[in-house]
Image 1 (cartoon, helix red, strand yellow):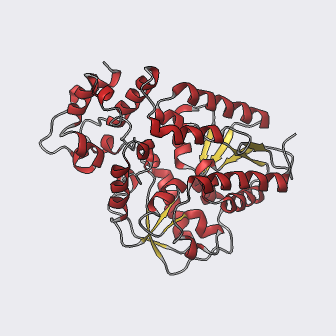
Image 2 (cartoon, helix red, strand yellow):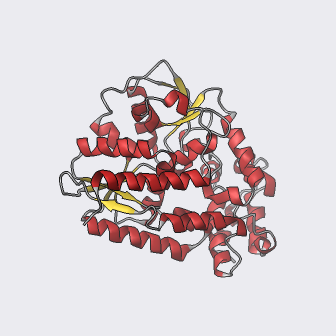
Image 3 (tube, helix red, strand yellow):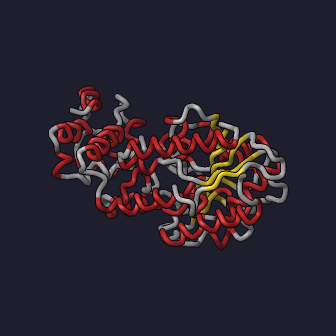
Length: 367
């Protein structure tokens, strides 16, 4: 029996279960979360291994449940057990595993102090997704941070959360150890992350880091002076990774308004936000489900969607004109960019490699 199964004994068996009503995954597999928990406890996942991997791990169920039950945490525990038993990850997750290998290789990883000051008081950590989305945005953001906060280094690598979400605990811990070793070489444990998923991962599993999110830093140091908003209203999509991070959500809204743009809140936002569909590695377990989730989210608004997560931007761009908030600050061609489709895996890796080469060309390599 899984540790988390007993928690579901608290299920009130509501006539109308809020999590099931709002979660497309739960709606397809059970009438109440306790029912699914009982199936898992009886070994249901061995005959249906895709089910525990089909959850977005977005925590919306916990937010909606009167007892704050979280089926995602149970699904993650089952994934970890499946890995131990040789049942997981799924064959379809080989794409994720190859991406993890790439993100740990010399084709992407790089650690640099601020070469102008020769010091490193903190590190800018753009993460895999922003690096894959736009090397230019990463470079311009980094230049701005160095100008405002001398002594800011940069680190290219993955936070390791894709491995954690697959249930591969050992590899995840190895990647965190590699991160810490690189941080210690640079002489700092302070990190500014641009990725909500990286932020959530580090907050939960790397308490030794002094952690800050990019939007909060930009709220303090200010935005580029030449950033002028047009008469444009966006619907703001909150990453599910920030569900419990009200300060981050508010800092993003403050930045958008400071730039002169308007926000039309989506029906499900802030702590009630819906997942973009790409959370939890569910895409590789049930593509039809994820496609439905993305479409459902996009249909909440008639506006262009603004995000502060590059992975969310790429997901929502399948259905709706979408942008990353950094496009508004550092991309003068953002009106064209909002219409760009999501990038293929090949282009993503090419962008990550390009970013690394551009940083080396501009700053050299760490000694």
